Length: 372
Ligand code: ADP
Ligand code: MG
Image (cartoon, rainbow, N blue to C red; front, side):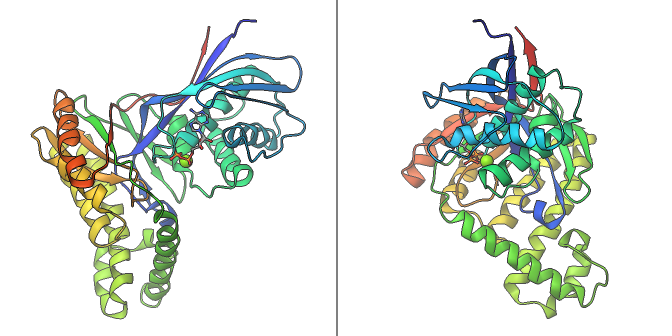
């Protein structure tokens, strides 16, 4: 029997605003021109039949009895999404679906959110419920699938941008209020992403440690700045005034978060005046701050960023994601993309003995559903 619809959810890259989300701060991601697609047909019952082209595996489940299956990790993202959508009070119909995509897996470009958001749109469209949930609620349902069903403690950024992204726009998200604003990106802002393909094994322990260090910073600062709840509430001037009270490493962690929040807002202002040179300088400064103050870069990420910055036409480059591996992102003038890719393939393997991957992309639309 023939499929009737295609639903897609894109991956994402964060332009600036790293390690700010859990400090109630700001992030500025874009949706990629890379996505996970579900080619599907609605069913009249509550059965779901899935085939993953990328894993060459199938899975069936019943919407009345979703159950975590350790040997089908990919399927849990989809079962979890159906479960989570029904938690909001909706009643879904089953689907027959084939899925696949080109968001690199486990590389920090959020293939997991792309699967969840694509699945959510497939289930909602099949059930005639696409208008039943506003975008932010779809994103929250997808996040709940990952947090509570799959058991991965991710924030809301990835699902938010995968649902709400727009061609040639970045999305400013306030991680405290979850208010958001599309920020136009000029045509001249092309993106090159370099995947270090280096191990991220240090990332999770460092992540927990940094979160604790930020909490310690807030505790110390609360003594002199009454009413603050998170580093989001602290200005650079206030932090400097309190420096003597803080251990140096805690001070530097706080300095990264406080300055990074300021850089995100500064980036939005620079985009709105078309000042890509300033945006690039802010991206560069973000990398330096993550490397020196937050200490989450790595030799591989530094080598990737150095290769990106080595050729003309690059406005700026920085590590993106939690750090210690994964990807770096450069904003480049249109026409310079291939030169940047060539420089990465030339320089990065010499520095690291690792063969990288490079993705040339632009800010793209969020999730889509197309009738075949
Ligand atoms: P990422 O940084 O890419 O989000 P995660 O570890 O969070 O990395 O998510 C990767 C998981 O998402 C994979 O292990 C798989 O279960 C699922 N996934 C990603 N891409 C696909 C795909 N094309 N088809 C099926 N499942 C996928
Ligand atoms: Mg993920």
